[in-house]
Image (cartoon, rainbow, N blue to C red; front, side, top):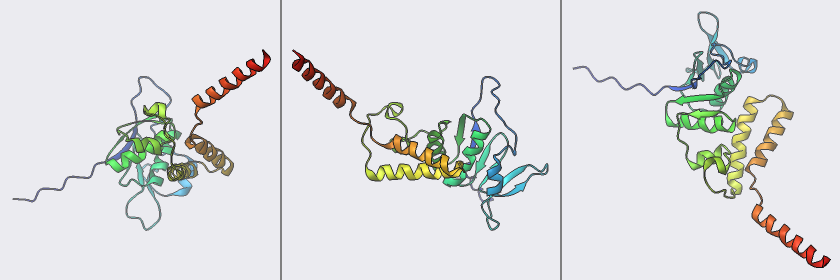
Length: 208
């Protein structure tokens, strides 16, 4: 009796969500930003299209693969996920579906949501939502003031994504400034309204 074959690892895959009508999305293998072609060592398919993207010449496995209608990876490395999402944006995939192991699906969800993409295939935790800088209204929870460590962690995550996707230093600085503004706790609006009302009442009293 032959030994049972081990179950294959789940395929870590990112693909566009189905559309009800033509929306100009690209499904062409090799349709990637030029900067990524310069960043990775690439193996091409028989038609000469970029297919497998390697970090360096010693790597045994590709960081990710381009299948045209989908992108896949054997790892959940943040920089590999960032590159895959950059390709998704380049191809007009405003909504994506992720499948595979939990670590990969989490990484795609967090980075994808921070970029404004709709991501299906993963159910986020509250910490995932915080890591993606999701507004409290979207998360359906009360806003809580983040700790200094939490703010630093969110900014570090935003910096990884921005520096991977954006090459212009000025644009990087602008986006990181926006990220900082999003994670800073909002002032207590109700307290501001009460203070303003008290000032107005005091002003009316002096005028009488």
